[in-house]
Length: 230
Image 1: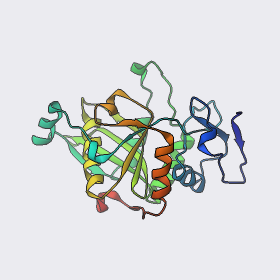
Image 2 (image 1 turned 45 degrees about the horizontal axis):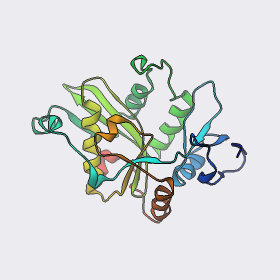
Image 3 (image 1 turned 180 degrees about the vertical axis):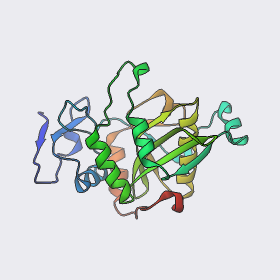
């Protein structure tokens, strides 16, 4: 089935079952607040580079973490017992998304998928209280962090960065524990990575993921500054 080109004047997507084998569902449209919130509600997210049109994805299977399944390795426990890092929420979103935007040549790809258009869009959603950042500090310096979007009882992780060993992992574990306290059902990790797999994330069928999201539409969103709400 060919990939659908979106109508800029209509906020609608094909059913995720129409995605390609790779997970691409649609092309085009915009990153307006209304379209992004609708997309995430339906299990769809944008992922593309600056020289491409907007690509919308809904992969099958979906890589997720159920908070109760979080794994904290023995090697990480001293970081918490000794409080080697400090964590804050929504205290410097711009610094976090800009750090995530930086190219990572060690990964074999010198570009970035976090375009200026995406920075602008997610910053707007942050100001509206839907997108949140986690900052990890050491001696007053920002050494790691992550950001993502929250709807109902689901947190959709977008990107993370680290400048010191285990800093991003420390921030992620701290976030999951906070979300577990708030009764969150799921953290969407989108695509499989060894890093998140070591923390307990696993693949589930897209159909199961979408079933959770349909139920999630009835749940209130923890909207606002998470530095005050978590």
